[in-house]
Length: 491
Ligand SMILES: Nc1ncnc2c1ncn2[C@@H]1O[C@H](COP(=O)(O)OP(=O)(O)OP(=O)(O)O)[C@@H](O)[C@H]1O
View 1 (cartoon, rainbow, N blue to C red):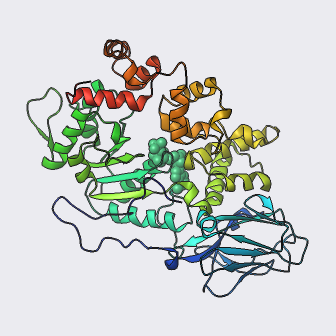
View 2: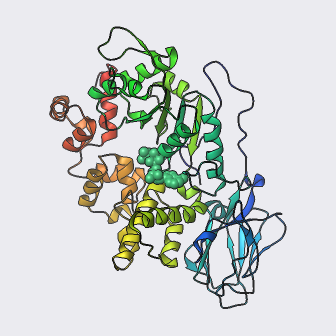
View 3: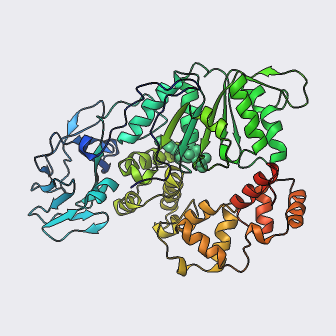
């Protein structure tokens, strides 16, 4: 499954030089090992243990006593549960990297991606294996069959939970990036962990004793952005001192601010708002974006400087084997906060592991916590009721099943950002555009008179999010309009 933000995980470039040997990107399934990760087990300590298949030739036999699953720095043990059959479920890797599941002779219930298997052999396509197969055994254990491009490693960055090759790679990159002092660009879908990665870079770097100051460029209006960043004494650069300025959603920075940031990166100086003298910008800059910044509307000279180091956070659906350890992590933090440890049923965990998580780790965390409190309160666990409204419903809602009010509500609840509203509704972005075009109350920016836009801006202090809501027009289009206006384009 390819993400639109696919990026080489780390490019080591600076303004003058391209290093000849960037960190190698493993290519193709040939470079990968087939792995089994425990997504769920009655003993929580077993969650995340892995078995890595040594060769591509032999079948993998999965039964009560084999294979041996290993914790990263611990002992090996089989699944070892009385509801797991002694007879083996066999996993057979084919030449095309599809995988067949051959059922055991026993009556043990075997599920594949949430559906019970009855046929003696079920063949999964290479694409299905790429997406991660979720196998349920005996109604007690969930395994993920997936590819690994590197061997498991102890985590040196405890805050970033994950056992997938992608999670290991991100932690390696963060350590490399933390050892340098170049600007960094963090890319990844909303909720994939960019801010957490910025905090980890800060913590692992020599700047950890100075503050990291975060500014969300999507929520500061153009009028305030300059002061928020460069205000004398109070702006982010002044506050961060020798630390880090983290610009979240940097793609939304107004053009004038983008030009200032470029000059900061170029000269190492800035002029505080209202001051006559320039000051040295001592803080390191980290930017984050959930969309591609190469579309021309972002300052490309700034982008080239920010791209000195790029760390890409893959979406959760591309690292399904992390869902178990992440769910456990959220359950443990809920228990630590509340002092209660309610148990979530394996059927519910299976649904979590099979979900595509358009809102990524943030959405998983919210759903797990809601589920914990529902169980705690003695309420039945209704997965459908827990999934919507966090950052998204399960993907693949039929657009023609959505009422105009549902479309309007999703836009209202998501700051009139098309992308987030589409995620919340579980429809693709093209479908979302069609739904908006057909909607009687939603207007395209081109249909609104400039005077009305100016009046809305004046009424809402220049805040594009609130203006978009007042004008009933998508926020992205309004921001594009404002960028064009600032650049002096005839509109
Ligand atoms: N690998 C991880 N381990 C533990 N928690 C994680 C991990 N990745 C993300 N989270 C948690 O998920 C939530 C969202 O993460 P974060 O805010 O870093 O995402 P983001 O990519 O910056 O999102 P946005 O683009 O919407 O700002 C946070 O609560 C964070 O702690």
